[in-house]
Length: 250
Image (cartoon, rainbow, N blue to C red; front, side):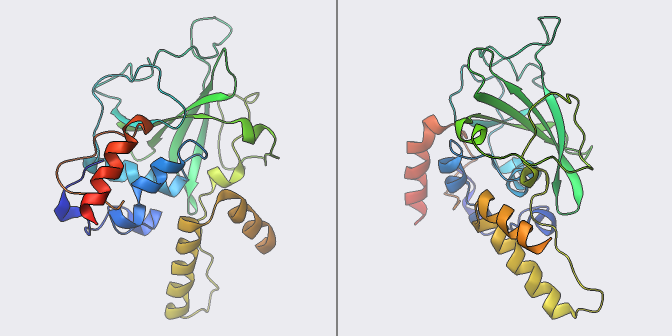
């Protein structure tokens, strides 16, 4: 991926919500490297969607994207961004793709729509489409494709009671994906310095720990961006180009 060099240390919009202050902190390169083995965390999704100007917005649907691919579209300009060539499960009418709908939380508030569909021929292949609830930025959509075999063998918690689903029979999203972990609890009389330290520590946890670690913590207690231009693609197939760009910065 490429981004404008003078923005490498620039502040990201929405950092007070998602916790990433710079593109280096967001570390899109690492996110791409892990996109085949895990879903993006809600705060990562929020950071990318709030700062889409740094990334390439695809003007055509991707064709048969592989597991680990995630791309951005402007859904107002490209209404058929879902036409990816894959065969997805249909509703009873046999024509409309069956998509479940949830709201993801970042902190205490629901901030992200997620629509997810399962493959007809391979039910372990899942597509998730994310966009912001914020009406001023809801046109940008992030689409992530992934195999989820390991999720099937893992216990799945019920979704947060504040989230909504358009398909009660659909598989539940793990609760940690509904609550991103940016929820910071402050005691009523805690001083400002302690609150700031607690906030920074929690942000460090959500930006470094894996989902299993975050789930355990909750149970117990209740890119570098290279020079020149914009991000070319989130697709894993362009990982080599991305790595070369990162090396140029270092």
